[in-house]
Length: 246
Length: 246
Image (cartoon, rainbow over all chains, first blue to last red; front, top):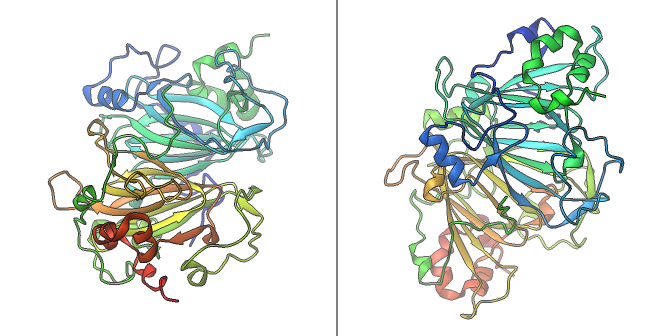
């Protein structure tokens, strides 16, 4: 059956800091914190946002929570909160019990030409991603693994899209504890247009903001060195800029 | 946020036995038990089957298990097995412990013009479905609910596809205990061609054959009456034909 149980494998490249130079945004990084309700989107993109009731996401792009299983499991995570950046931004849900989690939650997530990137963040839970529409690049920093020989953490890069014969991915798993950044690519290799990258994400056990944190600039330096920060700093969340302040 | 936590909702119709007459296959039902390795598929379909390492599925169509989370949760299901039809067909995995389940499993599932339908079956666990490619119809028999006023169970029908503005679904949840049947539609409304319906399914907690069973012809009569069986019998799994024998 060929089960791929080790998550973000497949047609990926493990990069040294030299290789990181090749990771560049295609659509301009947004100047503002996140996609705005007033952002100028094409009619096709606007139609999808309206049909799926999407709203701007704090990581960049748009989203909607589409499912939260009502059954619960004991939380597999330590009770202390190490979340940075988001605890104040997104208060706990009413009735939240930190000792349990919903068995799963799902969202739609949508990057668009006006909201073309999702900044580095991680979750304690593992996430199953599936592609509906468009193309994009994922950059995974394996913060949960030991340093490599060069003293830096492993970085993995892969393309998601419908061209499975060319190695693009329709389904990809990101294990808990890894920082994930995402950016939009043109709908066709060599093209310049995009109607956005639309995916589903299913988090097991279910999503809670206290299990989520952003990567700060200093933490990126700790993981990949000054050189790595120069190459990938553009993919930090704008919300992470306040995290290094005392 | 508009969370849709009640599963198979949205642009669906609850049908009486009269309404069931409108549910007809578009592509001919297969004469054989399931998609054959030798089935005649188009080059585009064959390319996807090869790229994703798909194999014929006992329910019809093709599939591959793509992920099985290594962490486990206590099984929420009674230990006794009520599985029909599949226990003998698909032996338990080596090392399977009926008291626990993997926290989730995922597959790709693919209906094609030569393997255009998946027969009625149910799982004790709930399943998150997400669409990659193509269009199809889902028929859900709510076997876990009480009879309606007419003495029959509720039937729900909806279309999955990329035209979200027209109410087609990109993501749909089927709760445990409900029988699900699926069939292929043309890629475009009013068209006649299809390159197949390709989806992902994530089961929470993870899939085991002992949690799965087929709908037998007699059970379909019990749920929807003789008239319902006449209208929807074509969507029974060929494997279900042996289930009513003593």
